[in-house]
Image (cartoon, rainbow, N blue to C red; front, side, top):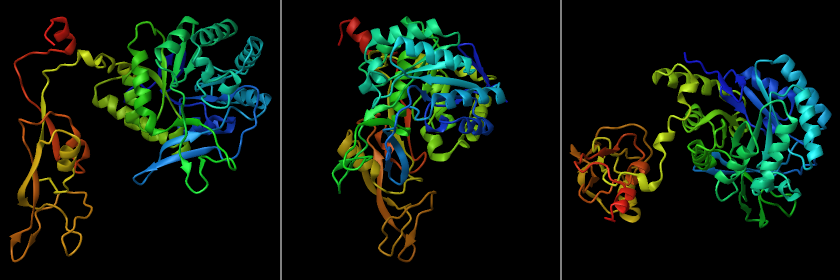
Length: 446
């Protein structure tokens, strides 16, 4: 089995799987249960001057029968006394010395930063995470994402933390900016040891169409919240990759955003994260999901011939380039396996209405399961032999085929097809060599 231990900013963690700063890390009892389940580290729910939260603070988007594809919250930082939090951090570190505890912090003045950093270090925190990402409630008070939007302020506060701390300082970045490099470079210029990203995205999750109040509704009102969960993973991966390939961002990164499975975690690590942090999936399924993450990630590394999680860090970065550097001569076409086709017509409609009109149909044997006497299509999950009717005559259906000369290799048909491996994209060989838009414009041929 591969060695899953990692070292980030001098902090040793038994594995790269950390609990993010959120409700699952609100108390010492919760963090200890998380460690018992197998989590390597935890970022404590943000500490600062305790606030009063509202009731009705979470909302979610369900899609096509799947619960909580996207999650929204209007909850703020800790509402528990700081004394209780620091006492529990001390107890957790005393009982779990090999697990990582990071104190997430958010205050206003330099004096407040100095005091809360000292108390965090004295309690035994392995590191600090400066919360410059919260997009609601705290930003109206000049904290959270309000700091991320002002790179000079972000750099200055980071420098304060470095001045007051003798443990590593991470800066948690907000995605609610035009270019993630701006706060990222500001954090580095302020002397941070590491970066965490992304925090939640400013959002309104929906509107109650009966009351006409946005969700989650607090009486007859609501407000914007922070969006997270599986739906934000592509945004998080992009921002991670942007910083991961920038040579000026010469600090380790802890990746956050929509991570639910070992595959998600592996993707984040391949794009430059040393550790990953999970929140929404734990709120949905509990701490136990780390079992599958550890086992799956271990098997993946073994299959790749990698002996350590560290070998995967950043391996996908070289493949992330600007559009103008992509090969314009690369050519793929769709191939449809007629034996697997169930005749649902999704590829035909998608190509006709949403792509390049290169899929057509012809009469052929029907492989679809007939769910009613009129031969209407019903659900099926495995390939079936052709259905025979009318005294041995095969049922007929419109079988799709690809006009390969017209196919532009867009992938849409493959993406909408409900049958695994029924449609595959096949590379077409060419002798022209690689040529990008950048090459063409440089040579004056565009």
